[in-house]
Length: 152
Image (cartoon, rainbow, N blue to C red; front, side, top):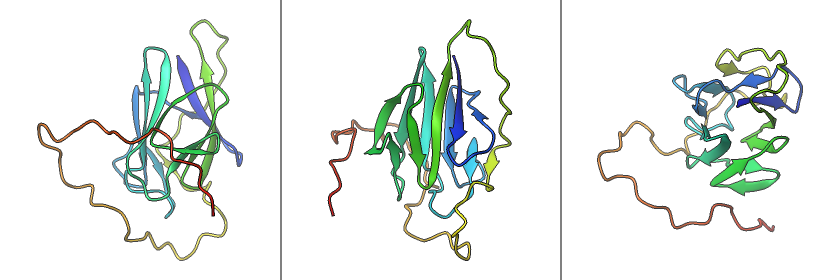
């Protein structure tokens, strides 16, 4: 299964060549989105058994699938995913489908940042992501996968 993300604002497609793609603002991420609205470690995209999943990693500005803010979700072809302020359409090509050219990403996206970007301040509201998880530190999450409708 070949998966890519097509920026809705235009630009080149981004091939997801790994089974696990870490997305965030931090330099060590597999896909770096350079904008203050993106958390240091924002979400992870996982390809497994012919399916594609996204899991938000406690980001400040959230991850949305087809307009719904999610903690985790399964993604299908033509779904729209919003990672903070970056909007993409999911493109899935199954085995045996005709190949199309898609530029591999260079790990960093900064040319898609909204033009109303301020002075580059990155914010201080994020949790520290430097602590390593020890054995037994991961527990089942009893929260729903999607957030309830946000009404103002």
